[in-house]
Length: 318
Image 1 (cartoon, one colour):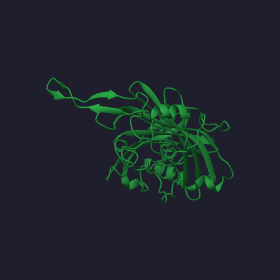
Image 2 (cartoon, rainbow, N blue to C red; image 1 turned 45 degrees about the vertical axis):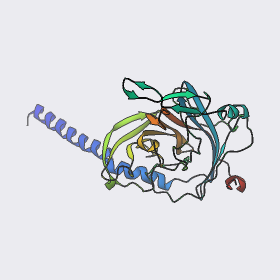
Image 3 (cartoon, helix red, strand yellow; image 1 turned 180 degrees about the vertical axis):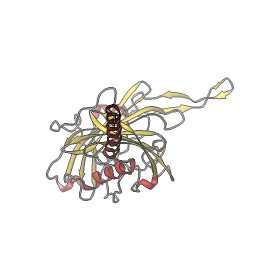
Image 4 (cartoon, rainbow, N blue to C red; image 1 turned 180 degrees about the horizontal axis):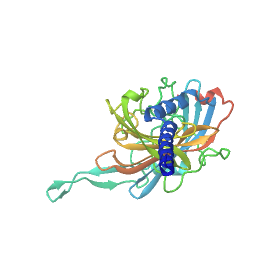
């Protein structure tokens, strides 16, 4: 056998075996999806979680911020929220409210012209953002929540809950924006009740990407049925641990306009577990005739993991 033929044959075999090896190293989209669910299911959660949540949105040239102190109990998924109130700011916010008059006709079309009686008023009512710190947003089945604690804490506070600094980075000025209020008076809830399985979606591996410094598989998901129930659209999974680094959902909460927007949920790793760090949309949300907000963000900061919390923390306020 001629030398060059031998070398060519060896090179061809090496290429074939290399291709097979690479193919075997990269799991299928369905396998990645299954591993991601397994990572959620098998994680050992801390018994209690405490953190701060900020809601921010821009409306009529003003930034509106609301802060909550939040406690979570894992054994029954009890969630307690206490809104942080600064008396002077609250007095300004409640002094008046924007009202709308339908008076003028512009080029034959009726338009709403607003008279803002209080520039410090919110665009819509403040409700509790009942979002768990370890929410998977429909990727994993969750049992119904225990009665959720909430309502405004009547005690005046000078600012957000003081907590020990944690590995969670603080929200940047360019990435935070949002409220936790619903156009209806229903409390905010998690996006989905049904656990997603591979047969609910057409799953495609879009590639491997770096998401905030983590190498992640990017899965693109298209629901095969009930798109308003199966709302996952993208999933980024840690290539090493299969923890969820980021996901995108089409619609969140049980009510408009939240359920029509596309939301991106970013997670942060603390002690080997991923927790919600930020939920954001760039979409325009319409809360009324002239109450339109573009871009909203929920920021979760200052995570702590106490060994215990007073039982009264999770008693509903009357």
